[in-house]
Length: 208
Length: 208
Image (cartoon, rainbow over all chains, first blue to last red; front, side, top):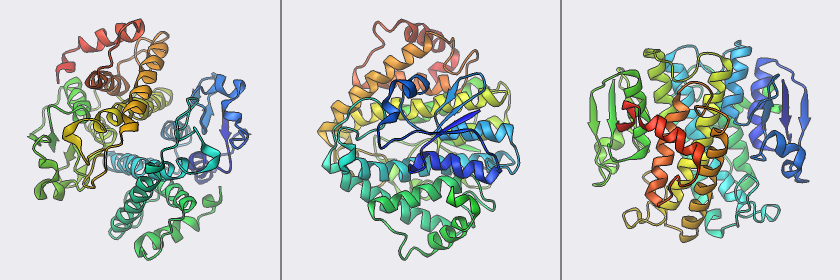
């Protein structure tokens, strides 16, 4: 297997933290997103969507979605389990992973990509150009703030995002909360979110 | 278990088709989205996100994401398997399910919700109002067209979306392709997509 990464980007960080929690080391290729390497011919041949992370399997085929990559790694390296032990845990982890993607990661990306100079005509990921829309900067911020509020409320009742155990849902949430810092949204007075964030950030995997 | 549905809506159709393929019948409650029942106090107590599908488990807790619901049902009713038999199949199904959600379902929803009169201030799902943005109508259409093109190209090489077997990825794709009809995008000359669509639409589950 080979892992295509970009250490400065939030999306592949989900896989990096997952690998670190499992204690897996993979041959890794850095893709320089700042230089536009993801749009180059060589990388597009691997992943026409022009995104990282990518996990290339031994047969040469590629997975390009974090959840698919983590599912594959969980099958090959089952311990420690990060995708749940039973029906309910598995479902809850997928539930929160999906919610955090749409309410957290996509919201922050909406605010960030529609404003930053480096993302002109790159408001969405992929090879197609999409113009920045100023209205989406404020909308994305508002959505991201609501995401932080709702995650704070949720964490009042549970030690980890999907229950009693650290899981992929915590990884996705950690990446989303740290990504919110890119649009200057801090945890602030949200005390349950603060408690959880200190706990998951203290794990060695968080520096991945 | 109890299933909260709305027979006219695309999102819960993913679960309806999944249930039909498994031969499962669940006690079902219809939520009238056209009348705004999803914003009512009773439904918000179940799902503060104001969306369907919802699967209420026997302990009273609720799953609100299609993938989480289908994962839970797959655990309880494993046969026929719709989420894969081995590491690679499971990962490929999750890969395509996620791609079709972001490139297909979200793209069509972007075009549809930002234009329809019934969705004024409801450009995004959930209890928060979000203004319609005319620019997103054209952007959503363009994204949805590219989605149909790329799915057509992909289906040149594979009988089903995630390989040799019908799976959740086909269900999500069927719902997305039919949803594209709501913004007047047809399969047209895309012959591989047409062949696949005829095949999956001929299954009894497709009328669910």
